Amino acid sequence: MTITSAPTPDASERHLVAYERQRAQGRMQAARRELLEALAGVPELEWLACARALVLRSDTEAAHAVLSAALITHPGSIDLRFALAGILQQRGESAEAETMLHELLVRQPAHAAATFLLTSLLSQQGRTHTAAVVMRSLFARARQDVDTVIRAVEMLDDMQRTADAAAICEAEIAAGTSDPRIHAYAGMLGIQLGQFERVRERYAFALTHSQQAVEWNIPIGLSSLQRYEDDSHPDFELFRDVLQQPGLGEKARITTLFALGKAHDDIADHAQAADYLRQANALAHAHSTWSRKRWRRLVEARLAARPLPFRLTAPDEWTPLFIVGVPRSGTTLLAELLARHPLVCNRGELGWLATVARRLEQAGAREPAAFEQAASTYAAQLRQDDSDAHWFIDKQPLNLLHIDLILALWPNARIIHCRRNPRDTALSLWSQSFHDPAHDYAYDFGDIAALIQGCERMHAHALARHAASIHTVLYEELIADPGSCLDGLARWLGLPGHDLLATPSPDHAISTASAWQARQPIHAHSVARWRSYAPHVPELLRFPDK
Image (cartoon, rainbow, N blue to C red; front, side, top):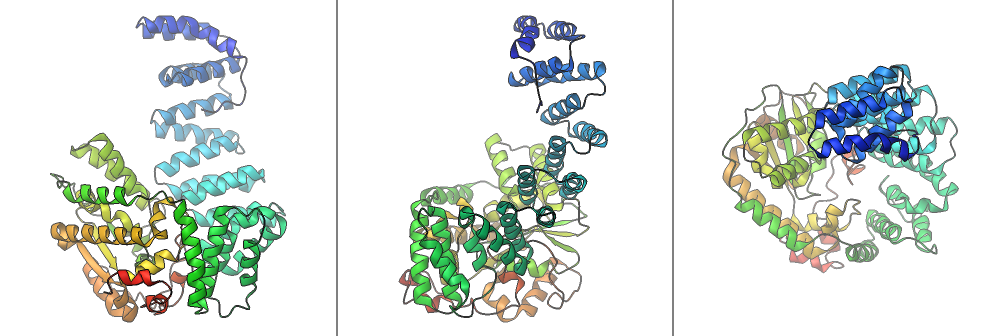
């Protein structure tokens, strides 16, 4: 609950003395009645202060009663309505909170705090389109301060409403903002949206107007905008100059080394690329939080887990589609190709399945009711409120860990397992700068080997239990003959006929490291790429060539 102002703590605490005494004696109704009688006739701010004190005591029920009574006395108060909406949200009364926030925003459309609270509430329900409309309406009425802009952009980006976040940035830029952070955010979002020419312009502004801009992942962003043809491109000099800057942060050094590695890889200077990548990975691995032992324990726990003793009823009106496998095995490319079908919607890499799985495990749940709630929570985030598709893709590769849970929640789910030559997979992982610490395994070949081995074991285990629900796609076959590969996959999924290769990719954000590659025509540049690196990265030869 947010309260804009309040009287001194003594005033609110004074009203709570008798309440606490009665409450301690178990006389809750009498305590609340006496509290409300003591507050009768006091100014609005004292009601607010008392409610805040109750919230700090984790007594949201009493706070709700206080605010409800306060609104009878002060029916026109915006602050009381906002505070009560916050309490309703905390109590899980989402519909009531939403109604109150909508009414508040009708009265005061520029109320930023109410806008953010309503946006958050809608997002939690998977209504991200509606949430984005609410947020953008705040900015459509008047310009906001920079901190509000950044907060809104980050919230929308977290909701995967990338185009809406970018629109807010671009409106600010068009209005004349000179804040380099807004330009940097616009660049980052532009990469996801495939607006590569605009990205370079936005990043150039940020670099020119802030000495800190090199710390904002701009070099690695610039390196992802194209395939370099030779080392005369000015980015090469820029990246080298960044590394020479005094006081350069460790993270910026790492990502810039990755940028140089990628740039030299583009021009087939494999020896120099390997040198930069080795430096980058060594520095990144020193800060790694990934544990080989924890990963192996997790895999063993999944393999030893008993199947759930039930399956929920499969939904008739939609089908969840999970694309899994080792990261960098072609999951993004395949998801983008399938999403060309008018009845398929690609949600990218959602984190919600792991979240609901963790909640179920922590609660020790084994009854169907808990799993029905988990299925509903996840389905809201997958389906959202902006698509009439029938098949919905979640391409989080490590959902491979949750195959048993997936098929218990949705018996009609379809799981596509992507496989790629382990040497190419390992090299691709080792060549990437990941922002999420969950991918810290990528900086060490021993960790990469452990990850691949664990994924292979999980795949074999899933096939033994659920062979009819799993289809394997080999990256090399997809690249060599995409038409046949996609036709076979479409028949297995039951997709109505559609020429996926002749259809343009949908205009949406790609938030993975494949944002540029996945938008290019299918090519074989990355097949057997490891051979060019074997003389410089002999660790690749430890992986099987299959």
